[in-house]
Length: 115
Image 1: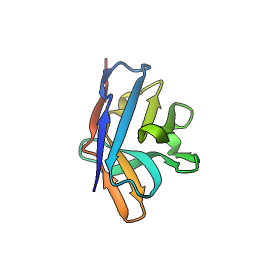
Image 2: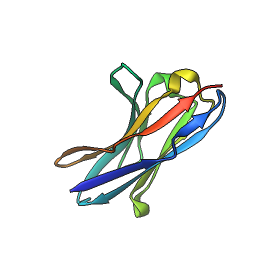
Image 3: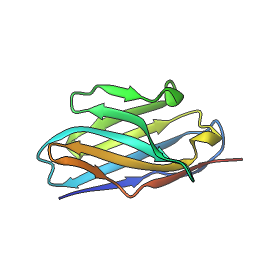
Image 4: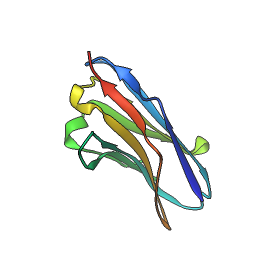
């Protein structure tokens, strides 16, 4: 039993910044990695960034140098700092947790980048 709750989405102008948070609760016996995915209207859900339990991070090419993923083990929370946002970043952002028994998903938070 794992629950993931995202927050921090909203409307921002191009070039602006947002910080997303994802708080995990429930049975957290084993957490291998947490990450962020996004899904734009009419498109598939794609990887944005992942951080492993050991602190290793990976990013999709389109966000490298602009987004930073980080975590707080004591708070069971993962963050995504998004800078220099572009209209093409507009999407619902989903938090993902990879545990020993499978993957869990949050319900998503909407990020809209527009003038």
